[in-house]
Image (cartoon, rainbow, N blue to C red; front, top):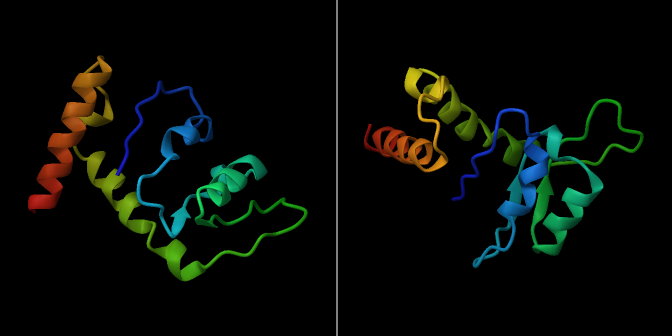
Length: 114
């Protein structure tokens, strides 16, 4: 698993390349519509994985995806929903990237234990 911390105004898709170069190649990479660009889909294909990304509603050529695999993305969404219950993370009291990442690790461990 990888986590990339960015400033609030950076779009998620701009950091996608931080999530490439796996030692063990993933079979699929699941992402939301924001990652549906041709460049990102090509980077996923270059990794040897299948992109499970729904196309935007205004796409000229819809690209099919596996809704069953995409439904598993809710695990990540539930993690972020639980994270928002922890006010210290939501408001990002920790201004330094390393401190904030440490708080994320503590939160993830706490979720894993429960």
